[in-house]
Image (cartoon, rainbow, N blue to C red; front, side, top):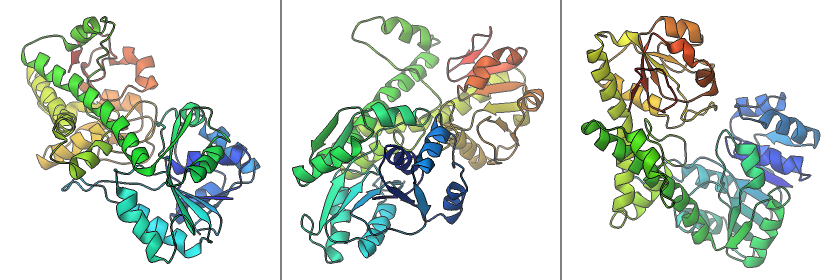
Length: 406
């Protein structure tokens, strides 16, 4: 049996995938309400294919509990935020989970850390917890790092098809865990050491962050001298070895906007490019606010209450708001005492912010300037309804004449 610890955006799909492929699974989370919801037969967030996978896993016998289980295999998939001052990882959730595993696990158990961590985190924080509880690593407890590699909006497909990395002290243990993941993973599974697995995952997300930052820096350069960044990128990308990404209002989600800071915090002397990329991407929400201010002046819009933000999530067609650029913009406006902007997102059912609408038509009726911050399918399919509005398109999805862009 596998006890999967943490039933959030990563732990829950992983638990369901194992269970639906014939592995006995108990999913554990400290959140009693979340566990109660799952035991009532309902998923806790929207994701394509997740409900079907949930039903299949339930039929295969998956169980959900607030209690840690006594078993020989644990997968820890809890959050790993970073300290905003030091930029270093905050390992508190991982440490707490491993401590509770140590309280119930038998000798010979394998503990797999699936949470994304900075290089050396397992050496600095996880190993001491195990040894302090009287276990000898490699004899009493086997330690493995198998970082997740999926993205909201395409989780089920990517769990099945993406390659995986298994980091282990002992190659034989790594191969055993590889065999476990191969129960559902159709991609290549690479076995390596733990520090390499830690670094590889952080490097993947840092690579993406740096490339997004290049596009975002280009948009600032082009805006300063009245050039069309989208046309420039389109033409440049015709070169066979150039693939510039699209600029946007910022970088959200728990991976790209967080993981590069781990390297900045741990290696400040060597991470100059990485730090600058993070600063560029973190500056984009304020850059968008400046664009909004100038567009308001140009169009005689004097009240913030006539501005509408379309989109609260960090990316299209998901309900995930972690590190959302829209939320960052709202926080920045709050600091500057600007109130009244309207907000709408079809994927966010609960009231998260002030002046949040749950009806698209009502939202449009109450604003003069619409800021497109997320490219949900809903807005792409209803773009004609924006005619007559002043539009700032931060995602380059609107072809209505007169639309402003970044």
